[in-house]
Image (cartoon, rainbow, N blue to C red):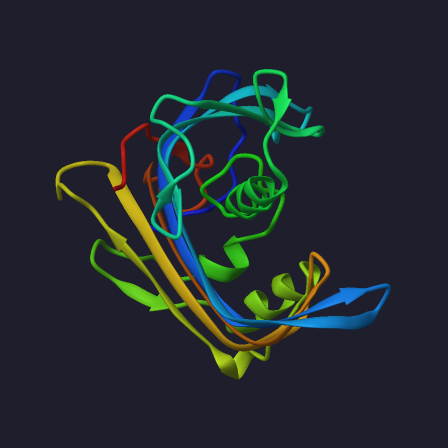
Length: 231
């Protein structure tokens, strides 16, 4: 079986997924392009486990609004929201009820919903984790380092492909099932650039994500995502 990451979403479609990551580095606070103070080297670890339900789609089947139901969401080991918290996401940003989430949480959610685990993502992640060759359960292959560097540049990061490592693995919990799980990880070192007013001097970023989907033969209709937890 081979697979594609393209998919026409439907209203009320649900997918459960997990994402974890870590950002480490020195930073320099910028103001109008000028450095004003240095920040000590610090770590920012995060985790999200939950479900995304589609609220609205556009004419191309891309998700325009969705709601995220939290099972676990934490940063640096501290829980951000209780299980069952519902966060709406759309063009206006992220909110709980009528209240926007704090800026730091919004930044974290923006990152999560740009990954291929989310229907809200408008990125071509098939270039990063996809495979032109048919793959069987248990096989793994490297991520596309050049594609990761290019997407990082869109977000303000500066990293060279040779400073990127990562792999993708296709696995199946049941050899008789059509369902498979895609797991990917990537680590970026010597990361620079400017992000949210902070100039990264020497950063390291790592991300892991996983989700399950129904396999389809090459050339068939796009994937139908399953609704199973990946944690």
